[in-house]
Amino acid sequence: MNPDKCPGEVVKLEPGSVTAKGNTANLKNDYNSGTNLCGGGNSNEAVYTVTATESGYVKIDVQADNFNPSLYARRECGNADTRINCAGSFNNDVSIQFPVLAGATFSVFVDGYGTGNEAGPYTLKMTLTPSVCVKPICQFVRPSTVDELMTGLTVIVTGHSAELASSPSIS
Ligand SMILES: [Ca+2]
Ligand SMILES: [Ca+2]
Image (cartoon, rainbow, N blue to C red):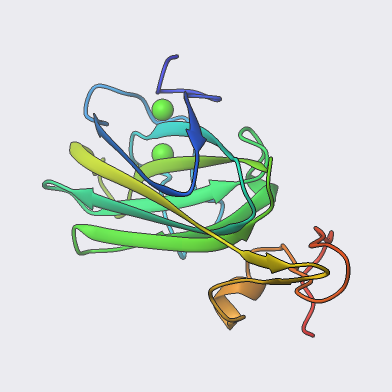
């Protein structure tokens, strides 16, 4: 798959970690994070579309060799309004995390943060920590935080199943 545009590289994420190396220097600027907070509008980016095989917590890290990275995830690859989470950094290292359900597909963008075209070699690491389910209750490993509420996903940790909600809520 062409890593430059949606859906980009297709990845199946099982419990544990997947590491990918890439280089945005030879790609094009097609997408941005959709918010000034996380940037991406001036820089080339690479795209990965990921399916989680189990419910749990996803943590995504980007280590940029020599540029300021922007990292964001969307539920729909081509739709900035479906952003799940994002981060931009003037350091070389940036990470985001969010809960997922089994079978959920999301897209990850390795972009650049700043006023110029921030691009170059990077290492992307994605880790899925599965939730622990003792029916009928699923206990997600990481407790709920404000970070999590930004994701637009609501994880119901009690009841018969975890469910996706259309908007964030505090419970
Ligand atoms: Ca691109
Ligand atoms: Ca971009």
